[in-house]
Length: 215
Image (cartoon, rainbow, N blue to C red; front, side, top):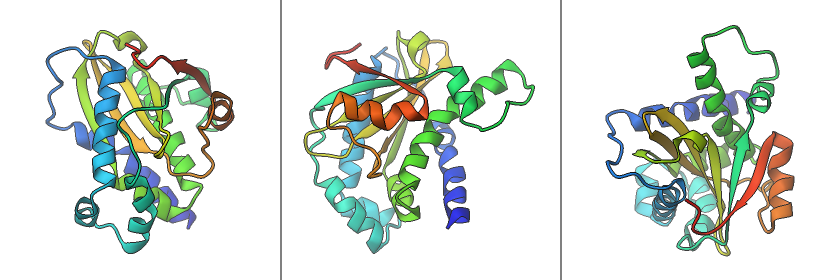
């Protein structure tokens, strides 16, 4: 089981890299919040389509896990939170001092930590939950005026639906990459700001509530 989870987590780390191959960023600058909403809509469509899930080789167990997810309403978030991870907190996630590497490689390592931590949350519910979540992911690259504050996660929560995390990473030249995934773990509770803090602050995230029209 541990080996299976490790292999799945390693494979999931490659998803943003593979999804970005050959993709040109959108020409018109958009806000992180709005681009996150577009990825949220994509995930809702994926989870709600049995044809898509079967095309992605979902087995019956995965379909059963995703059935209530697909039945959710992802049109309007109930609340949205910005989760940020300091460099020190990201470095601590590795459980050992970072090796002496160039600034560019160190930044690349640290930028991957939020995705690792969120996938580890899904993995707490077992390999099937982690695998089911991996079937419904979406990535994008786009232009924004918010690049300086783009290294963060937007957590979208819903009155009827599973929370969705969108991980933003500054890529330079006003370009940001984004990766969205469902948080299926029962360890994640988002019914209130206090519940969100209890779920994510122990991982090293700082939690900031956002207004619905955050730009």
